[in-house]
Length: 376
Image (cartoon, rainbow, N blue to C red; front, side, top):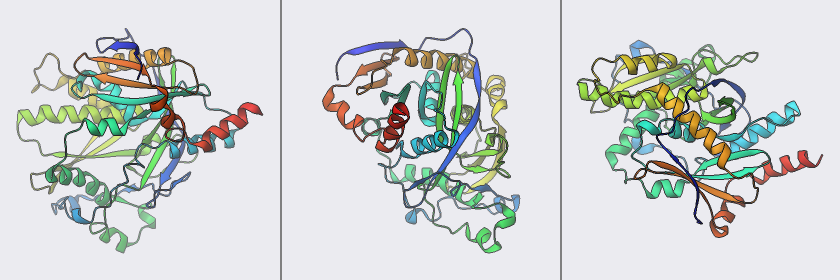
């Protein structure tokens, strides 16, 4: 890498932040065999009656048969770019966006003022009018602590909760056998349904791709489906004030995820130390900032403030849009250093940039699609 081009302090804030209401442009699925398709084949539907919750479902059941996604597939732009390509061909127009990326990346940036202890590493390229941002998985993994079996089981319990709380079709179209067998179904985190939304902050237009866990009732075809989507989460049961504060941190991250994508409903499953499901609770995304602000148990003067986080997010996105050079055939590293509490933008040397630019980031399919439009 060459020297740092620019850096940006975590103390920066915009005085006000105007936000654009997210709207779905397209959707896509990642199938069990790892293929990306422009359809809703992997969309799930929420179904978890109280009578099932009362049975204390074992959320680590089936752990040894868990089918995990290939890490090379996770974070790929292929599905997102194919969905954008399909949208542009259908509408005969190029999407308007300053930044195109994944919801998870913007969640990390939005929550940074209150999750500032871990480094972040993103690769950035500019192409055909857009800044594309992708997480550098190799650097992220190198800076993570190894996961022991208990951590892996806890993570699995979240996927298990999604599996037992959903069915593959609207309930009226699902057989009794499918409903009853979902408890023994082999769990995987390969299949995904993702929404592609246009949104923005301040003057910056953003397109985000993000996984959607399920739909509450149905997906409308004539109106924005985002209010019908549901985020599913698990957390440890809350019994002490300390656990309340820890849950607030988790709830804040969940709020950021849902807020960015326009998901309005969150359902939490609470598990005990043995990973048994004890209860289920529902939150409205727009109510969470008030819950965090008004919690009498948390007396920390530096408690989480969603408005403050949004003012930082607006400033950071504005800085990224301004400072990333509008040059194709180059790549940059956007990183966060917890020791200095600064974002930095660094140009990558050719030996590092070439693998990112040539097949490691933007698909040839998408680049050719855009070049044909450019030359038409």
